[in-house]
Image 1 (cartoon, rainbow, N blue to C red):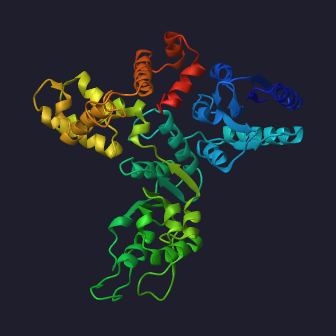
Image 2 (image 1 turned 45 degrees about the vertical axis):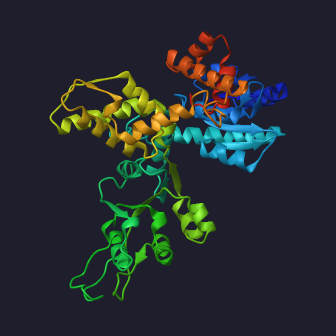
Length: 457
């Protein structure tokens, strides 16, 4: 018996779903709003949640990440009266099971309920997901979603594409896929496509036989041969030259390749994990990347969030990097000032986790024997950017064209409201229920304010 929750404001939907759930012998509960649904979901340990899009207190799709992050890891099925392709894509990208469009028949509801419960049962008896890799630090919702995709990829012997901005840790996640897969005991071979030599790329990929070209005084294995039985990680796959993409696609499809200068083919059984910080779909549109290769790469796609979307992980990452840096110099015991943490939170971190690591190392080196780390110990470009952002957010800077200009009332009110919400969340330790009680508003209204100002929970 599965535990099923419906969040929908139409009473007729409550009746239809309750009837189907009763006949299939499942436990069923219903809610008519996001606030009521979240209250039930937090304490109900549900297996499946059917979530409507247009609800009295908000948009269901915007709240989907909260539900997928619940301890019971429920399957989420979004239902709506106004289906569109972008909404469907967003639901599936965020871990939703299905996107259903009203009107729903009893047969459609029953089929959907049977399918998702059966999948849930099979998933529960499958081997447990791997533990979080020790070198991947954090516990934010967006990070947990990426790690869930790593678990999914590890259990499937298909190509995996890892996407994300520079510095988000794509190679760490590629290693995690390998170490949690059945190939964990075999080789993990890395190739940086951005550093491939135009004249030797064939040899680097496929290897060569002796005498294949001038200077080839001995045979050499390529990365495809080295990865036999294990995993080949191709970083920045978007940099692979177009004329080489067709040859590599054939290797993926047949498992066979021919070293440069050789007359016979060889076989290699490897699992491919590729990574990119580029928009491969746009490259396909521009004729810079083969569409058939892109389709082949997308066995499983793992998207890594930028650091600016992992604010909950910022402090724990900084402390982790500080501990590592201290180990390198034989240990150090320093306090951290409030202005240091404030600067870290205010900076957008365009270089992501990699930039944060270097900034922490630089701050420790600059502090030398001092007992406290201050913001002035951070790299100059970090402090300059934070100072500029502070000036841009000042009341006179909003909508002003000169120092004598005065802000519009609406602009000033919006800024004050945003600052109030930020201080409120800090005061309540980002507990939404407590924050709503302190402010004297409903949680639904508080979520609307977060959405209005583009703020993360």
